[in-house]
Length: 178
Image (cartoon, rainbow, N blue to C red; front, side, top):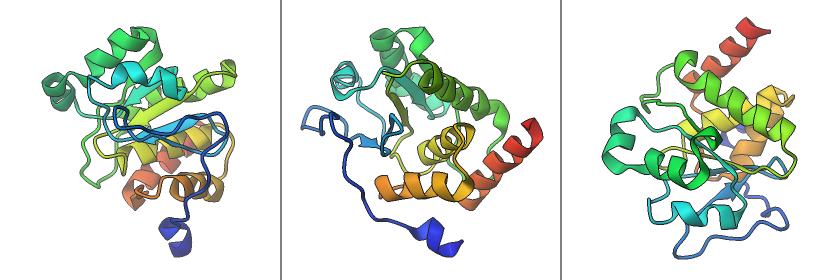
């Protein structure tokens, strides 16, 4: 397992997915899964996310941060409230309560299952912990086993770290709902 959690080889960007430019946040597309991970996009660049293939957003930043920066409001304005989910998590390295993130993971998995052209951006502040955890949860919901889901997140998003407490939170929740 230690090798799995430290995997860091970056894979190629999927075909048809534009790369970042100076005015856009750096998105990392996770293989052909139509899931992107990034740090928080600025309010100025939110409108450009659609040009990069994003149709839906999951914001993993806590309520105080989104109120202060306005990123969640900008995302809801740009994409519509029905295309944006909020998973208000603190990045504390401790287990994450499913009450704050599970609905957002289900939202993203449902969008990807029902809309073949959808592209879901999952972001937190830096695109390292909370967004990686939520992307892992979405991949698990979509049928990937633990090893596959972790490998996909870590091999494409080199900045990502799947914190053990966060992974345990996902796995315990999956065991409880199945």
